[in-house]
Image (tube, rainbow, N blue to C red; front, top):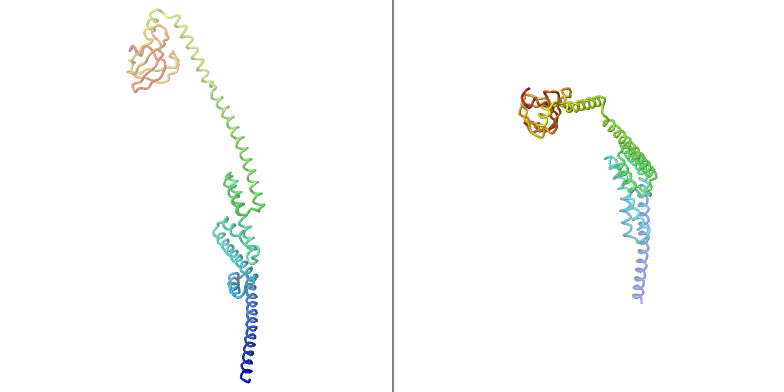
Length: 311
């Protein structure tokens, strides 16, 4: 009986000891997890997100508490937020304002360590973009200015200032186009008026024209009064090609020695005569197509005396 009592006692004591140890272990675990959670929470509050995340991961191995899982997710988001903040500062230092804006706009509002600073830097970078857009507009580069603002609005879609600057530049572009159109119309009008002025003959040209008319009238009178010999000579020269016999001959603008000389031709050049005007008793003016020795062709009046070698 003593042996049985002893075994029963030992068994009971062992079970009790195990239970006590179990309770002690559970208490320790709870105390340990609570301590780790407290430590992790303090790391989060201090902005040491990576350390907090690692500690939460260890806690998750000891408990399946959903609060721990939520804390891990929050730590992950804040780690990404901190990375975005660091990237934004780097891009800002490099002068890549648009990339900096994109990074700063990804900083989490719950990131108490970086959010406020990120917003201030975002504002500074945004002002630089707005200034650049206005400068492009001042140089009449409206497409570039508007494209820059569109890119910004695609990143920061709730920026009322960006929309305001966009509308401001859009109105400036419309005004510029109106002014450009008006200036072009005014220029075209001035050019048209100038062209009309150029079409009008100058006083010298009018005098020359009157002089030529006078000469032609006199030439017609001479035809009527010409003697038969000169008439026969004039008719014989028409519709034929003649060679210049004189060393040099003046090509005139009309059938008179008073008509202006338009150029000079030389011996060997030819003239195909299609009209004549008798000038007195010793000269017939021949109008025709002249071909120079180098093949150039032009029209003018030449005296018949250059054709018969009397000059």
